[in-house]
Length: 294
Image 1: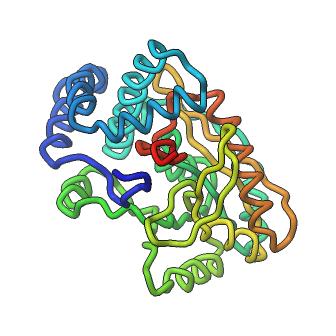
Image 2: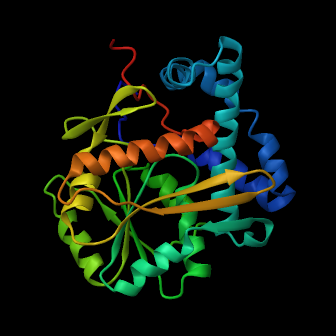
């Protein structure tokens, strides 16, 4: 990765095959234990990613060198656990996990208005598991997830055997902005639009706001849509906690009408609170604040 996120996730079909084999034959804990093996590989061959995490822990959270080194390792491990959990839960092992719904009534209120809503999340925790929260707890809820992450097609095809996505619809961001029409159509069907607010692609418009004491770039789209469309906006995160427990946070946000900058400021403040509570679940593996350029 360069200073910007390059739009793709890392991984190979072989790697996913190994972890799925361990989940099926030896259990979830065995897959967790196996996760320790590839972490040294990332340390050696993904130096730009490691550097991004090092800037995050050293410059933003002010950790010591020793605490930074151990935190980078732990972050990779927790990230691996979230990937394993996503596969395990989608493959029918839901009973091995517990969920906690914090702000459920706020999403119920949005659905009752029957005009849809926008949930803005971030690459912290394990937001894809939100579909399981909605499916189990919110009768009739339907979500459309707006994505820009173009994972390798062979990985997608392989994981589709295990990850059930029948309750979700994906809206892919397109250069011709036709995804805007898909978003409006989904809102007209009282669908909940989920979109990440913390990554932008190179050569696309962005906005700047202070996060953890330094200005960073954010995509224009989520905040422009959230501030312009006459629908409720919530910040939502699904965070991993000990003993295979996931905690969903939903918070309704009030902001100045038609003011994307104000919505972004509220978002940055909200993310800071999440990061301070879950510092090891910041999964933007690149130079988010462009510290290297400085």
